[in-house]
Image 1 (cartoon, rainbow, N blue to C red):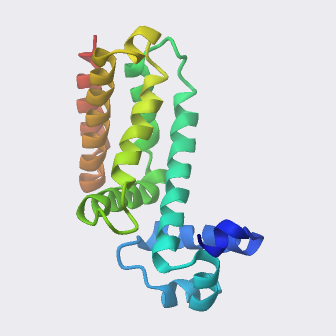
Image 2 (image 1 turned 45 degrees about the vertical axis):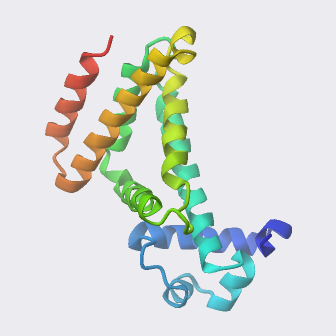
Amino acid sequence: MTRSETTPSPRRQELLEAAYAYALRSGLGELSLRPLAEEIGSSPRVLLYLFGSKDDLIRSLLARARASELEALRHAGDRVGRTEGVGAAARVLWDWLSDDAHRALLRLWVESYARSLIDPDGPWAGFARATVEDWLALLAEHQPAELRANEAGRTQRTLVLAVLRGALLDLLATGDTARTTAALHLQLDALP
């Protein structure tokens, strides 16, 4: 159990937010405590005291990033009525995903997702699987009850998620919003 789990503090939260802003700018792959601490007005010793270890700090940052992503996606999804279907929800989610304002968070997500696959025993462990489950649950909220509960519904959610993520990776690589949006809409139009 880390110090942060036994004694949460306002300073820990303040440093977590500052470290999160740093991670959005710089990523997590090459995170080093000394430059991070200098950038956020702390010291490596304080970070280790508050977070327990560098790996625990990374886990806290990943949890923070997931919380931000889910909150934003849930808010975007809430703009669609629950009866409009998963395709309508995916279009609204894509509007959020393709907005330039969210590129830093999405690049951090891609980095963390990939690291989770490459280093399954490190601080990224389980990140990719957890985000898949998060997104599938979010998409399920926009399916009729009978689809939510059966294999056909899960398959539909998986297809929509694959299309969203594929388009997102392409968009992050190319910046071509018009082409990726058109491709996404073409696929979503084919949904039953």
